[in-house]
Image (cartoon, rainbow over all chains, first blue to last red; front, side, top):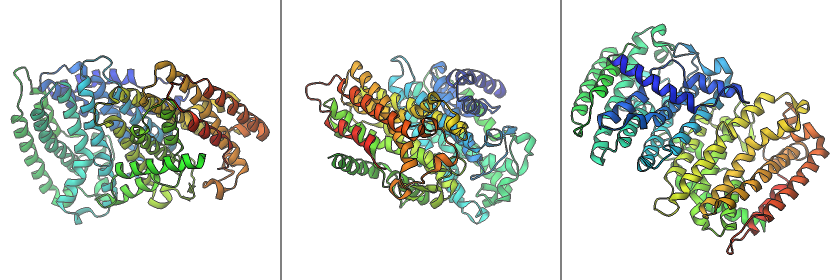
Length: 300
Length: 300
């Protein structure tokens, strides 16, 4: 069932991405090609799927979410391009394909990331065309922009880079701080985005935020564990890299078993937070529950 | 007089930047320091000054422009950080100081650029706090975001990189296309931003856009000429670089005298476009005129 949810979200979000991204046939073809290469690469589209599922949980119109959800995927793609650069994590493989700078060179890769970043902000600022959801626009922009800048994603990546090499000498508090910002913040913003577009009330948005904190952290703990236990072909990205460069991760700080225990605890906490969501009559949290289980039980 | 206008704008915009940028005392101190190093570096603050002057030309409240104008400077700073990277123009000197990646390393420089980019979008999305100017917000966001993404600034930088090496073999149409996007678009957006905040009508905004196209292009032609004729100490950045790497510039395509002639023609066209602005009774275009003359007669 979860595969069907993800597949459906992927198809609809990729349609929106295809419409929103510049075509390859105009001038600057290489820049546009690089933007499309990363944004439409064979990923899970988990953040858009979470946004759509959160919207459905509060009885909202998922179709209204598609463009903002596509913007989340653009942000995710931009962050992966920049994180993979030689000066950052220096990764050659992502989603089973060569990374952007390997294919297009560093200059085009940096610019493709920048252009996806701006385009995401533009989509969030100009959606919706009509008057419906106009009140949601300001909230959605605030949630996403707060999540991806110095307080959130970029700050988390900077901390991650700063502490790389420290490995197991870091505290759990430090790795938690990195993960909540680097990965958790955008996942949380995806859930808030769907909730706001569904017209959720303040207490509902707040409860979704608590769920988002837990599930976002859980996602990255599982990612840390998979970097130790999975193989590169399954992951679609380099494997074992974290330990090699002594990244600050849960397995480094707590050991592999400790990290697995923490992942299970966070799973339970996430499902409890999901149960505690104050849902309206027409709300349907089943997809959100499926995706939560998938995040925690996935193999790649 | 022009120095006084620029100095006044600089002081007020830097106050706003200082408030909006993250402090250096929290965690991620190096990221925050790098953001402040570039955004508050000793530049001219020309884009914010143009926004304030455009607002005054249409009789608007300049104080309301300060935060959006500061966002323009953040965008400009982000673009300079990324353009100066080794994989791009590989410059060591900017505004008389070492470039960001020389001081902070490439990883922090890339992230500082990204964080300034997001913060600029956040300021434009959350300004103003109250209800005044709410209608202007959507227009301002659209103008700026269209100007800085793949259609504008980033697309222009990609074209510039793509054609570097071609030098004088390029056509004037090619160099014009690069300059309008790479530099002209953000200058034009600064002028539109000030106009919208002043409550300018559609025909006034359109006329300002025509002025912006000319003055933005003129700015970059003068920049090209100064790269040939000025010295690095005056410029505060490396000099003679364009010819060394055979950049597509006006002097490369038209020769130095041809480029100077084109700069004079564009000056005249800019002043005519300024004269043609349909101003309200309380409008005051004197600062805009001073800044236009400065752009075209400056020595650095």
